[in-house]
Length: 373
Image (cartoon, rainbow, N blue to C red; front, side, top):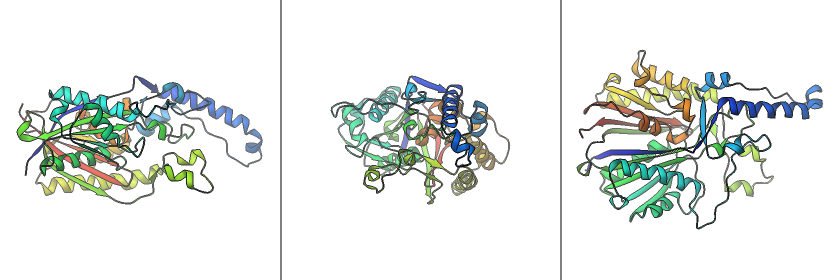
């Protein structure tokens, strides 16, 4: 069996970012108007008034201070409150492919590689812009790769599950080199009129280049991986092409992302910590052998609880870095973006762990070791 190596990574962000203050100002203006328009129903007890939000509430609840978005104007337009995207012609590159392509090109450039060196593209993200042709094949075509591509999705574990698929393709001899691309265009999934969730997601794309160990200089050896899924309705999106067939057709707002946040927190955190500790034990490793945990960036409080359970001690920010403040929740890209931003300072032989967790429930974990250059 051939060993696989994470050779490099690349990142794309939209040029625009929305701060908590900007998001809250728009939301509160909408709340004020909604309460005024529904004053009679509120007064008669037929409906409850909408509560305003605050930047302090958002940061305390999530650790988020801002998020990147593909369309700031649409998100902050009180009459729209969702991104506006121009419909592209069939011969134009899609939004997701364009984002993923930029991240993939950076990953190739950082490794000094050419698309001719790549055999396949895996595009793994929470949701796909379309069903077919595959976004992965579109990226493959744009790069001029003579090989294969396919799409996959495992909600917020899409990035790590895709990474494990890429590793498996290398180790079984299916390919010499794979580009894993995770373009998470998540702000269109949000109901920006829902106080409990309108701040959660941000847009980003990240790419990893996975190669055969005998072809790669430096990078990260793969020591082990693990995947786990448990069915839960506590994080859900009912959006899909079948909606148009439903009778009666659901309201537009019913198709957005929804979650039972408290239940998710209570159920997922111990499950993730248990999986990580069991994986480490099975490999005869201890938590303190991990110089860094690159955890899924969904919520600062979840990350803090999981890291404490794993390390069984107080830990430094460097041991479990957070990118939530700048990026918000980037779904399947979160742990990969954290790795891209915070994988420096490792000496050969030092180890770290990437771990995702989210809807499904799903958990993906990959243990890596820094190689000599």
